[in-house]
Amino acid sequence: MRGNRSDEVSNTKKRGEFPTFDRSSLVDKICGYLRTAIYRMEIDAGTQINESELMAHLDVSRSPIREALRVLEGEGLVERIPQRGVFVKQVTYKRIYESYTIRANLEALAAELAAVNITEEKLQQLERLIKEMRKCVEKKETREWSMQNYEFHKIIIKSSGNELLESLLKSIKVHERWIWINHADLLTDEDYYSYEKEHVNLLTALRQKNAKLSYKIAKEHILNARDKMCSNFLNDKMGMEEEVSGSTSR
Image (tube, rainbow, N blue to C red; front, side, top):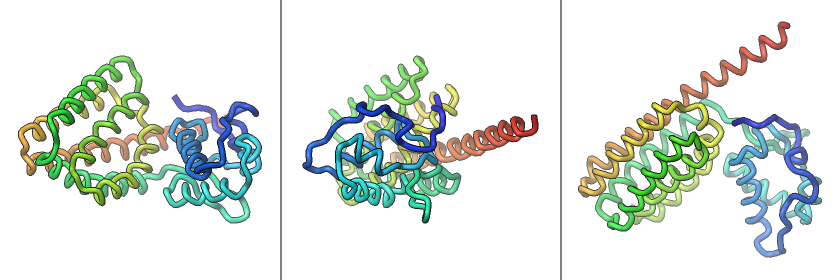
């Protein structure tokens, strides 16, 4: 599912294919556009963001582009390298481990609070999402699965009723969503069905309004996901290194 790597964002689209924006909320719209392109791997990790090309394709000035890039830099999606420019940030083992570990503790708290506050309507939505995720696994639609999974956890976080907690998790999940979409194709069917079982167990605990159990299941679920993603990341990295080594030795 991985696309070919390119050196500049200009190589990902042809001129005229970019949307044009009005002048309102330019920075937010540019940020949204670039986030989506990064999430969908239309711009690969390591790709340079060419400001001049973005100016031409989006029909905007340099100022909002630079401001948008500063926002994305703050979110950890891009990095500025002195004397070279702005690049889509590479995913690292440390980043995956830290992101999931922090999220596990915060979302466990969200699940604990949600067990008290969640409505029957939201519980039914969670149940439907579990069924939709099962269909995605059967159809090998890993990206769609990741979107449904994102919504599943979003409902639980929102149901906590804690706006500060929701805000903290939102900033963390910006990183994690990108990590997940880039590596979801490395998971096996067994991994996905394991996640489904954990989702069902969490839903059951929420239905029972068992706050302590909801906390425990949510934390274990995310830590399990962390361990799988870290393991798959290392295996994928080793595989790519072996491939490069093999091609250079020929």
